[in-house]
Image 1 (tube, rainbow over the protein chains, first blue to last red):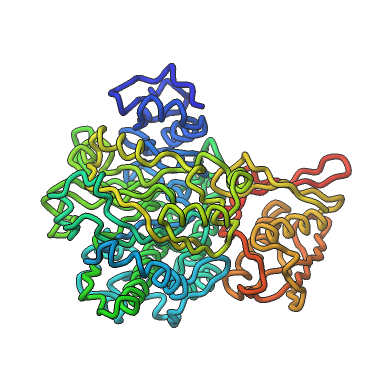
Image 2 (cartoon, chains in turn brown, cyan; image 1 turned 30 degrees about the horizontal axis):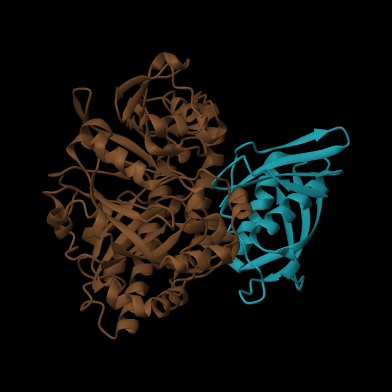
Length: 485
Length: 140
């Protein structure tokens, strides 16, 4: 539990930890939380967000969102922006699973149509989207093709029959981040990644069939912009990232940065905060490699969605196009990107690290695809597999306060071991079925570890971000089918 | 050779402490823990052998690289191992190891968590009396 007596309360939903809190802080830290969430937050978050505030070149504030919990180096649910000249880039500020993210597609089916076929549908998706330990994807690509994927992500997919025409525009950054440099990716990372396209992975990753929750349909007008037009409409959410590829790049550069920090005279308060100046060779190399992983992750989610479209088409005997299975949006929640932001009286490019945090660009931003530009960027927040998820939109307040960022999910409160002690996988599977959620899991142990009770209450996180004004609720989605890696 | 899980160290991941009476034994204990996290070892057979030779800057880094090799073998070659014999040079900077196991079989193997990376959190080898110990946190 966090000691909060020296914090300055800014509102019912935000708190400032002053620079004087810890020697070496270059900026204050800011936490978005209700008093209840703040008091329940593990003390590691406070330690870590104030460590981040000590990093060279950080601008304005270090942020922890309402879902913040302990991570390696940076807290998960953390945001930090750095001056491009004086600042650093840190793998710990991005996370091992580079561009872990969320993707939401819609259908024109209602739950009453899907319910009788949910088992058939989920079982087929489970076959088409490999999940679990050491799985390989069905898409085989050559080394030169993999290089193209690293550079062009979903654009490559669109040019190679793996995406619909309007898919790339509905992915953050248009489906690929510029600046990828495949020559900075190790041989080990390549060999790990090349066979993993179209795989879900394990841990907290999932693929979920969801239904619009009529009781929590907060803004039907906004929802219409996303093609969500009816109560009980079925959507599909995918949560995964760059698999072993991103992890290997993270591991490779953690090692590089360990040595580089000595050369650049950088001292950090935690080994996992290893970093290098963004302008240094090591910093540039990591950025080029990290972008490769981010683009691989966009591609991975794209390939998965192609398989999901195929499964729906086979199950409902209609073309996926006829089922209106368009991509609503795809957001990163583990990434660092150069973005232009107005802060402290300037308007400048900064390197925004988001680790377990979602971009939340407000209405009018040129990076939002045209159909959504007037309403704000879709923000997809995944809950635990039992509690459901949310679709929100970005706000101007997020642009003004958090470098256009908000929370990403719920965050664990119980260890994997403890969760397994509390509940058995088979029992959980049966209980979820009783509640109308059909789950197919690669392992029963893995299922037990992801039980809803092991996570924070997603609704309170979402409510906090909504009331704080850095994202706006559109609709809640409840799970009816789940594939667990 | 032995290991025990540390459930309160990393909520979202898996941490363990391993110990042995020799440095090579410690590496073997750590490898067995990594196996145990990924699969029930009782369901694995030892039909495939792999020789691993590594050099590194120091013993800590050598252990990090050795465990990373096991993760890569799982991702690239779909191999899981159950028996390990590891000899670490007296300066702690190189090793020769033999790992025995088999290709992943989803029907027969009781699979658990997909280990993705060794983290540097709390990472380190300690020599305490006649015991070698290491704390490892794996990203899941």
